[in-house]
Image 1 (cartoon, helix red, strand yellow):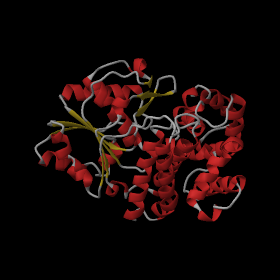
Image 2: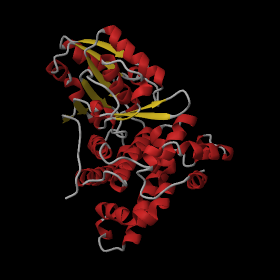
Image 3: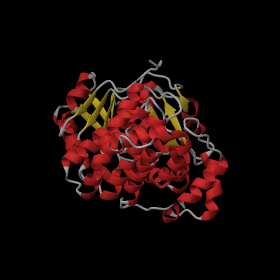
Image 4: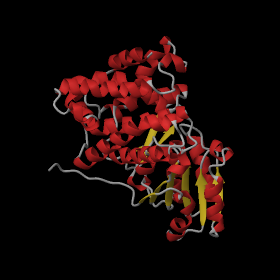
Length: 384
């Protein structure tokens, strides 16, 4: 057996309506004042109303912070942490997409133990303790409720990650009823994001292990089998539950077996062009997978066979190619922009994107095939 370590959230609750039952979790942590981190769109849509009402009905004080932005910039994270300290909150709840969950992680940390973000970017540099943390995803994509990472946008247009075991939540609450109102495009891009997590965790060069492999395979089976249904019929609660569980399982996998070049090439699209993270992954996924094929074919073949028993006796090259085709089909069939030019990227932007991707060495180092700046430029060109 290989030597490995595996970390994951202390507790996962998967239940319809669980978002209305958070109060006992807060009280069980000895807390009385929850600081709920979300975004203004969810507040306007009424998604936050019932969970907040249930917390207050249980006698808990709730301070609502709804200023989270996509790809959360440093000033928003620091402002949220200061607001939590000023309110005297003793527990943090993240409710929303990946940006809200990532912000909530750092609020729980910085409200309890103030420290400069610049000092804690990178692995295991953060200092605790943190406040109790409960994460409630409203999308099936980022898997942030199951990871020890918070990604922040810096003023110089980089995306930097705080990676620390302290950021695993005490409880991850999976309530698929919160995801039924997610529009088709958002459902597609977040679902593809989750599939990329599973694929890259399974094919990563470093820290791949039997537990992450098992989680990645099961995640991909759930996501592949239910994404189309969730996009076509948002009210299909069974499909929504499968997507949400698949996203969390993929998050558990890549929390321990880290992602690679697809994410590295996606990051500059978010930081420079404000392309949503899941869409950025979708735009570069297939070119990167085809680039990786010479080194990753046996692993892609294993994933292909896990999705399609008809590939059981196929040669690795054939099974791998069929697997990439199936992933390409998810992108092509999604109600999303299909090319970089569709999101405002012009040919003159591609060299700068390639240079920016090279700064994400913490992810490129995990890729099954070495990728250099000329390769990145070629891949962006293919995606354009």
